[in-house]
Image 1 (cartoon, rainbow, N blue to C red):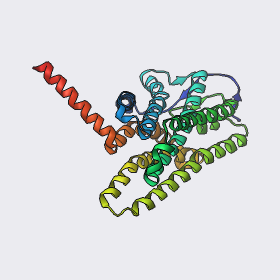
Image 2: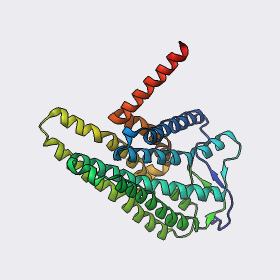
Image 3: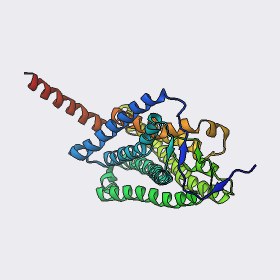
Image 4: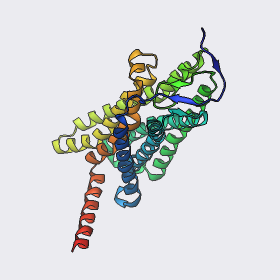
Length: 313
């Protein structure tokens, strides 16, 4: 018997991890850590003038994006854990899809911009302040968010036009393109071509640019005779490179090989990693490796301790 598909705007069932209730507390802890860590970076970057530099501007943009990324799916996951219903309305699913695609594409472009920033800082240090002017940084950030918005509008519209099967059961933690495509029994060739083009433009090309930038950085650093300067130069790049590996390593498994058995079987865990785990780890990665941010945090901690001592005295 053929699966019944229609264009009705019925609720979707997000299966997610509803059968793994032990993940509820872990998810809540990670969400709280994500909110705390990323909000702290955004606030510090806004308030402290010593962090008004291109690298910290892009870092605060990434933290803001991480806050939105995680908040677009975790609250719904927690609601599904707490209540008997595991559903999300058609409108809610559509909004989540729009936001999810927009933020994902924005992060891809933003990570490229951060790689270019590190390339200019290491390979062209004398021209750094001129090339990475505050106005240019703002334009680059707007480019990243604008690209994400355009990508989301195009791909979300194409996905939501598909006739979905009557059961509306999404075997994922969010309304994501690969899983929503599987709910349709109609020909999705156009959607697959569109997703392949988007993956090439927003995943493959950025990754090539990032790796090329770090290849040039490595060559420039190896030409430096001082070991301490080499270590310092590599230190400014390792945190961003680690963030790139965490993000691209998981996203490519879902979007570049959506029909892969491994990606389908572990898709929910992979999605959980780049929507929850990575945004939690990013503040730790950057604060531990970033001298400016770490210095501001140390001074903030001292002020808090001094204030507590005054109150205690």
